[in-house]
Image 1 (spheres, rainbow, N blue to C red):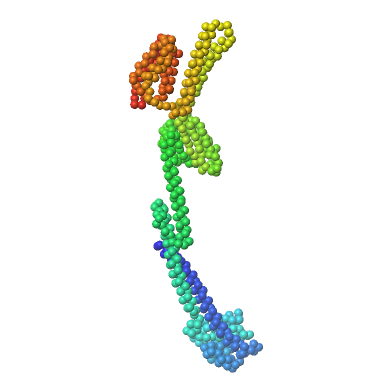
Image 2 (tube, rainbow, N blue to C red):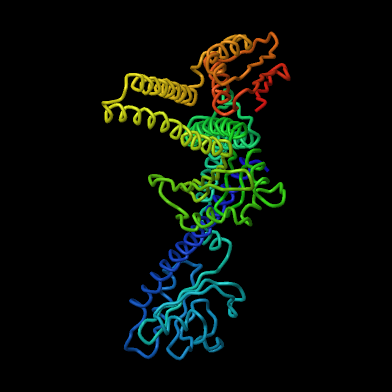
Length: 514
């Protein structure tokens, strides 16, 4: 059954019940009113009889006077006078009062004896037909008026049908109005229901969505407008969520999001990979990390964090290093406002190695710088403290101090070059380099130290061009030759060989025979 039919049926049933109740009450009131009119008319006759035909001080009745009064009454009206014991003293219908039974227990007489007045519709044993009786107490007597309960009295006591026809007319008009109103209401509800069904399927056609005018139509239009805004917001949120998940998917670090109950909601491939590196046994479920002692600091941190907090509070963040074999991870935990949290795993193995290398390099540089500085300081102190040195000795000390100064200059240049390489490697120019030419230039630069050390340099490089920074490549071979002069020994050979070339790399071997 359609909504309109259900609405119409419910309202019609409600209105019909109300109309029937109203008709019943009005019908009862109308009958009661007509009965009261009849009682009032018979009561006026009884009052006339009581005032003109009965004497309160007399024990009997004047039948002649009562008979004359009866002739003044309508012919259909009977008069009966009864004493307090229920004995009939006068009857206008002509029946012998001696033959009439005791009337004390007649309903109308008993009510009149008790309340002063009473009425009833019943069968008359004397006349053998139904009568409408009205009895009133008058001193020691009870005056009873009666009229035959025939078709005329029945018609008089019936309620007027005008009100019934009026109610039927009002009901018909109300039903027509209800049809009209329910039609308009049903159109709005049907359109709104169609919108809800389309919204469930995600196929709302806003351009062809129309609601009738009226309050319900205005409400429906407001609902659809708000839903359209929510739908647009949801579309934006879904797009942003896709972008965020795509970003997480290609994120260089491992990231996972967990619920308040520590159940994984999302984990990218790097996080799954790193968790399997950390755990003793491979697992496809990242929730297994909570059984590992490596993540106990995270569990302790979450236990100390508030389960819920306002959005204005700063998000708690906890970071600690995690060592799994030869791999070092940096673990960061961020707790959201709703109690959920994310864990980020960053592989810092190479960064840690670089840190150790830098630390070792800093130590070596410090050691290398200390040697020439100490030598220069020693030579200068000797010159200052020994003014009697010969010119030859002074010259030799100055030459050695100058040599250490050159060495110190080279070290400072190397440190500056390394710092520049570390801080901004993208700013280092890259060009085509003839590797054999670079090696020959470095050997030419160290030709005198090589001859003094009795070292024979052998370059076995082919014609080869690589892409790189000329200064750095030159520094590599220059430092190698310098180390050979210092540490290879006297009378050895130093060789440089290119033993392999691929599409991306060239491999060299630098060795000595010492």
